[in-house]
Image (tube, one colour):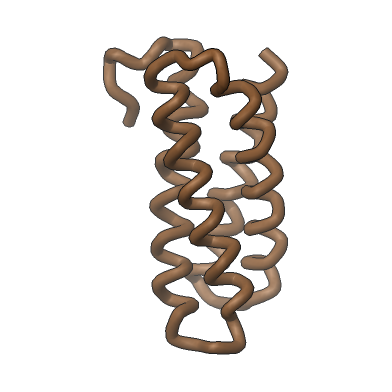
Length: 111
């Protein structure tokens, strides 16, 4: 859960980005064990990094946060699409979390 210091308007998106970053890191770690899942690993790591940056900018109330949220939504969609190709618990959980994060980021970007 986001800190009490995060603006209420940003809280849902910060929480979604933080949860997504964690799910992507877990999925990437799992996918590292199978070279056939290299694309999934790369997309998960990129998505986690963008989600973490989004969390940071939202927490500080940066004017750049909305623009980064647009990029984050696209990264989450790309990651989810790749993860959905694999029938593992880690990939399926990551895909669901990415879809939820993309939705929150699009809402934040449009606000």
